[in-house]
Image: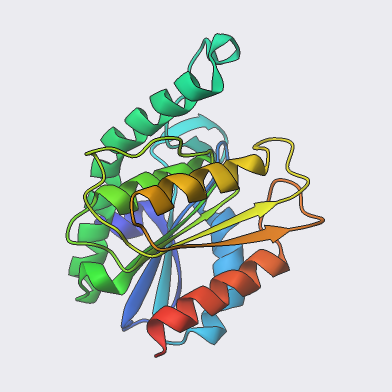
Length: 220
């Protein structure tokens, strides 16, 4: 069985010129992200959207990319975010494997593939995009856990878009500005979108920002 077909849900072009790998949030699944991709795919007829489930199943239809620390409540924000970033650096090897399979399946290169992650998947998308070489096309991180430090683990500088809800109580919106500062310090091109009436999610305002971002990159 094909590796991607075994774990992924796919929408969009059958013979694409670009691909977007979608990484769902904690306890969700690929189909949740695919519903958004199905709305966007008519706007990008030459793009395939690939939405895998994470490998760790924590309940029926519920998957996670990585465990959260058992002592999370006792950690400072800085230590928690540092631990999660380190975990994502390790997990980026799996995302790289997914990208290699997308490349093989659709005859694409790294610069034709973007990453879009939500919440837990947002941080994983960011860290993977900053780690994987050759540089991928772009990264979109929505309601992402914040990235608080750069460092020599950053080996690529793909254009990034950060989206967040002003009313987010799961990951407070300050996370976006903290991540933006780190990316700017690392000379990574970054744009942001803050949706005023959004909690923890991706709404039409965020989607429109993502559409503009992708079109500016891919339809020049």
